[in-house]
Structures are given as C-alpha cells and as structure tokens.
Image 1 (cartoon, rainbow, N blue to C red):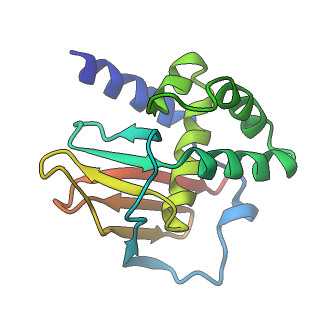
Image 2: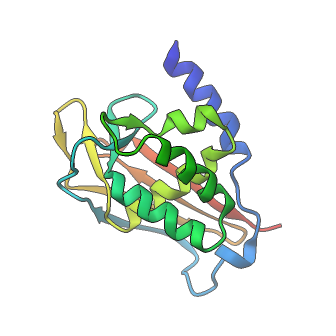
Length: 175
C-alpha cells in the first residue's frame, strides 16, 4: 500500500516538475532523436549515505553526504532557491548518523520533488552516485541512459540492469 501511495504522489508531482524554459534546454547542437549510452557509476559510497529508492524498491540510488552538500552549495551559490531550501533541510541532519531516504525531504515539502529528481539526474550524469540492486545485494557498475531529444521536448531515462526505469526526467517542453 505504501508503494502505491508513493507512486501516486510521485505521478502527481511529476506533472508539476517540467521545465518549460525551452531556451535553457532545447539545444540545437544536441542531435534530434533518441540516443543511448552507458553511464559508469561510483563503486564505493561511504556509510551513512543519502539514498533514493526506485518505485518498486528493487534498486536504490546511493549518494555520499558530501556529494549532496557540494551539489546543493554550488546550486545555491548560483541563486537556486530550491537548492537553498533543500540545503537548509539537509544541514539539519548533518552529520548523518544513519542513512536517510531523500524522499523524506520531498514529503516535507512536495515542491522539492522536481529539484531532488534533477539533482539525482545530474549526479548520475557526473558518475557521482552508486546504484544498489536489492535483489543481488550488489552495487551496479553502470546504468543505461536513453536521451530523447524531440522537436519540442527533451527527456532522460536511466535504466537499471534489468532494463526497468530507475529514474526519469522530462527536462523541458517547449512552449
């Protein structure tokens, strides 16, 4: 039941997380169409860590506390108010004494959903996270990435080793 409630909440929040600033993300230099690649992952994450569970709880994205705070500090320095708010909440839990689900911050303020998703997408792209496979009990070496760059929208989908959606980001939709 908890998983179904979480899926419903995530679906609702995803509807409000699209960036419509086309000039920021629809880059004509990016080839039109679909591209696929492999993203290598960090193979060691210190414990305790932040984590973000997949919808089916089969996988979790693990992120070192310093990686999260560095990302949020950098985004805050650039004037990102969402990052400032999330950084303030994260700092209250630092130093971590146990691993913490990043979804906890989304539940506290649902406007953070979009930013947490984008942060994870960027950290995946930067190879700064690990992905834990609950079925095998092992960290994944890599994940698949599919980028769909259409005429009016761009999205990124990360897939786990079973080709299940791990993380999806609708980066922008042109007005």
